[in-house]
Image (cartoon, rainbow, N blue to C red):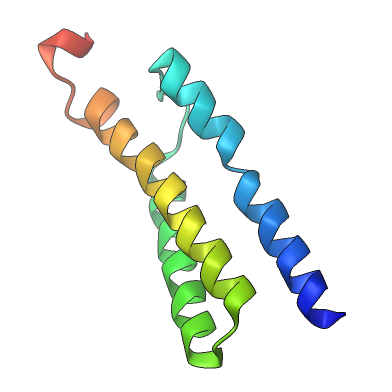
Length: 90
């Protein structure tokens, strides 16, 4: 039962980032995304991943691995569009 609860929590927190990533992909707009918040969030995901690896907890490992990928996409897009925009993006 505990394992199922872990997988359900991992699923919910992971898919929570997908709508934001899709919106950014479609709009190519990230001005309202906080760079500091996403940087700190990714740091937290990396620490959770490390913790999951130490515990050999697959719900933690899988959820944070996938969420790191999605969050890095959002952060890289933020840098590409807002922090270091090219003339093409303006």
